[in-house]
Length: 255
Length: 278
Image (cartoon, each protein chain N blue to C red):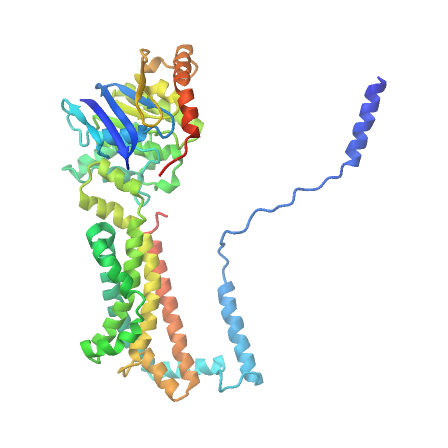
């Protein structure tokens, strides 16, 4: 299933946040969206998944979601959004309980996604007992449980320390290599965008417009941490963004 | 060479000349710690002081009975069997009244928290009802509901209702919106979001609101029992007061304090049971 954004513009109380964004996310590809803070990239992601209504423009799904898909557009949030009163297994069960699944089937899905995120030993732990990285892995397991057609990732690694971020990035790549998923990856971190994105969309500062789309041909499994090619791309992205980021930094927050 | 030696001696002199001070500790504090037995000790010391004052004659028996005499009054009350009668009547009134008031309060509070129209319609009404001293309404309730149990239930219920409503809708408002967005993003039906995200998220706030509401319920219980009640702790205190029987009056007050402690302990247990995840 592909996702298509057409002419998305958005304003909050008369302030333009996004302007005329059109973007295709083809099946099996990850599109990274980067931009200076306040450029509306998170808003764009909320619009893409139907959590917010754009002022103009529309989002459409092309084709059918994969068989067994329970929630085509599924988010991974920056701050995990786990229910603190439910165990790890309970948090995953939450998103399955309203679907017509047998108890055995549900248990099977939970066991499977916990195994895929290496959390099998922590099924009964409560979120407060987990480190940030583990919490985000629970959130990833929860997203996998509904076999999404498109993963909408809103700065999923930004709340983690840098070592944990590396580990989780490896996890995400491993998950994608095992079963390529379609995804939008919103981040302000250029290295993450370059590690995971097949295409990188650079947004301008507010109101966010598409400034440039950078393609990265190198397959995901061949991208190392210190890769001259990728660093070149990253440098290019930074030159694109630097002035915008500086200007965005000097802006007063209104509202 | 000469330079180096000069530098060396200068350094030594400097090391000797400097004086060393340990960095003083200035952090800590501003974090409540659990200190056992101090609370009990305060009670014990106060009671001992009162007892000593009464025995030595510093405190006149007309102003304050010695704690031992209050204790004797309590024992007599227990032995006569009247303590259980009073307690049973009072606790029933408290339970029925508080259950009605808190139950309705939680229900209305949740509705105010969930529906904007109900909020717009009921919030001014609740704000208007909240500051009314409910005790002032007792004569009205006697006319409406009769002199017997129902006027007492109504007073306690009404008194617990308003603080419970305010605490409950506040608790619902404070539920983490990102959790609700998460529920929506996974396509959870509205009822599931309310049942599995909003209500458990509001529970801590509702329970701490109940602490306040139930203390108010005990205050109103005594007020209600001062009008047209034969039995009950309030009636017992009123009778003792009108006979100027200070020992029994304080015995009654002690029972009320213990009831307050009991209610607080009970909510503590419920919190420990339902809020294990915190």
